[in-house]
Image (cartoon, rainbow, N blue to C red; front, side, top):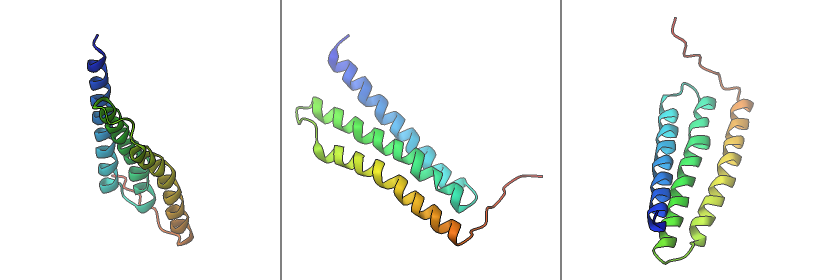
Length: 107
């Protein structure tokens, strides 16, 4: 197989997977019933989605001859560090304010 084809396939795979994770995270944010469960959408799935998109972009730009971009690497690291910390802080505030959990069970 051609090396360029493998790089394009890897880049395409990362972009599709990243888009799928971002979409699932966004749907979870919109559809889940209460604040604490809505935290899972953007902090888990969307973080993985945007991370995969940025890594795919890094690989694509490297094949075009621009080299590995330190900006995109910094974006990825910043995202993976700040998203869990901010979600933890939001969850602590929600617990301190004693926010109610909504059960969305059909009878």
